[in-house]
Length: 123
Image (tube, rainbow, N blue to C red):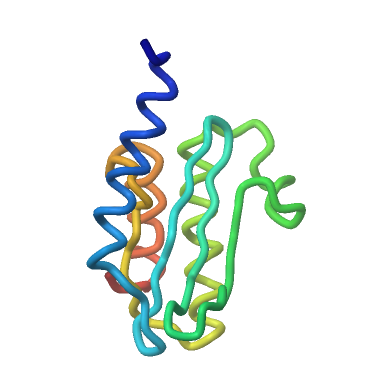
């Protein structure tokens, strides 16, 4: 019998592949990809037509790490959401396609998405 964590990981990857079959970022509307680990959050804005990462933000990046000292994981998910939306605005990106990467839209993933919306990113 497989251990519980391996089953959860495999289930998330199955969800991810189902989602990615019908979800794609374009030049006009790139894809906002979210990754959640046990300790950190990261987000990338990807153009799938040219296969390039336009910008990224994460809680373990040096420029944001000092800001997240003594905060909860949900609070730094909000900070990553604000950071990625600021970088997107600087590149002229107003609308994105949200890719939750197989994670449930709840908790830290939802906090990041809400922070992006509040900061002016549309999806």
